[in-house]
Structures are given as structure tokens and as C-alpha cells.
Image (cartoon, rainbow, N blue to C red; front, side, top):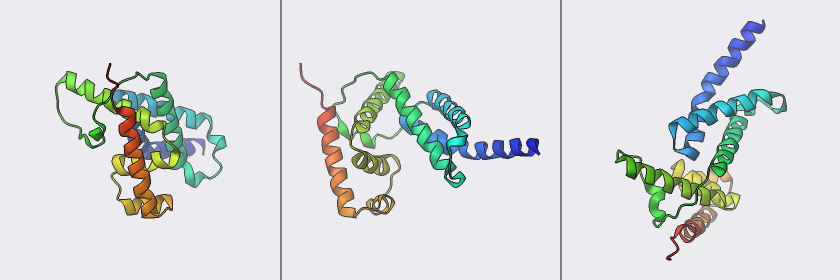
Length: 170
């Protein structure tokens, strides 16, 4: 019986690895860092599995742990960086020179840092729109708010992000 239970747990973890990795990758935009944080997430989850009250919420619980772990890691390793173009929310991942790729990653990290400082409702709308590419209607349904509220939070979030990311002229 114990061997069957271990195999069942391995299957569950293998099934959830990719969604959790994807969540972490959205924060880090770095494959190696995302792998490390994903492993750390599963270690934390296994250590605290007794705290999970509703087993049907395992995936959501793991994603919360992953997001918190990634956020903590990014804060610990944060560098201040000035971004002059807030339209980088639309930057598509592409092949570029190593210098440009590093600059792009630093700008994305700076954006993440600013998004993390925003109020939860505004932050969620921005993430659902730009990182999960959901429509305004889908966001409204997920958050259980009117589409007009989604639009206003999105607009305020973009304006706030643009203000926070402008380089200060010396």
C-alpha cells in the first residue's frame, strides 16, 4: 500500500509540474531560475502538505506557494532599473543579441517589481490581461467584477506603471 501511495503522489506531482513551472516562469522569465523555484515550491508543499484542507484545491494551493516563492526570490535579488518604455508589456520573446536579451530581461524584471507594488485588484487585472492574454470579459468573469471596472483598473494600472517606470532625468 505505501508504494502505491508514493506512486500516486509522484503522478500527481508530475501532472502539476508544468503548470507550476509556467506560473514561476511568468515571474522570473528565466528557465533555470524557474526550475529552481519550482523545485523549491514542491519541497515547501510536501513539507506543509498537512496544512492543505481541501485536496481539490491542490493546484491553486501550489500556484500560490509558487507565486509567493518566486516573488520572494525576485525581491531578494532585485536590482533597481529604469524603464523608459511602459509598452514593454507587449514585448514578445524573440531571438536577439545577448546584450539586448539581458536588457530585455532587466526591463521585464523592473516591470514585475512595479506591478508587484500595485494594489491586488489592479495587479490581477494587469496580469490576467497581459500575461495570460485574457479578454476584458473573461477577466470580469474570473474576478466577478463588471467589465467597466476591469477597464478602469487596467487604465489606472497602465498609467501608474507608466509613471513609475519613467526614467528620472539627471
